[in-house]
Length: 220
Image (tube, rainbow, N blue to C red; front, side, top):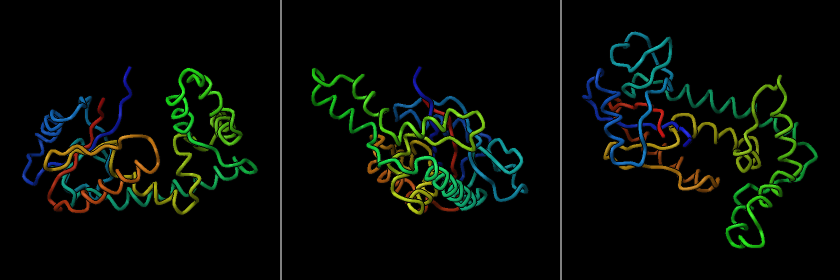
């Protein structure tokens, strides 16, 4: 089954609150994605404007005008969480050498599929002590949090960079549909590619008018 992901859709000022979900889903028509439903992704600034929010629930919502969404609180919370995760990760992998991300082994397989099968690529990736340490910690039933191996490159940049990585990831989803219908998405899972995507989507969000709307959708 295809993986699901989070997509943020930008809608213009004036979009009726009771049409936010259907309008956002319609905007996906120009992308390869299918809407699976709304996602309670955003922290809201106040409960006094619940009528303008999509699926308000306590201090969260699936969407609404930018001025009623507390994007800074979302970013600060993510930054702090990633900062704490990095320090835990640093303890877990202490004494291990920096590891290579999976894509480096996959590239070798693609270059030499006959002599370097994908099973060997995966075996070599998992055999790295740093990856093994992360997977061992993730297997603990009482772990404080998961240590995603997909974050390996970001984690290896250091505590401050990883915290900034969390800040950048807090608001945008895996992809973003801009006001003009452009669909922004990271082409690969490589850190450099993801950072280019995060820079672009956060810049776009910063240019929105405070009355413009953001809607979060589960997509496939």
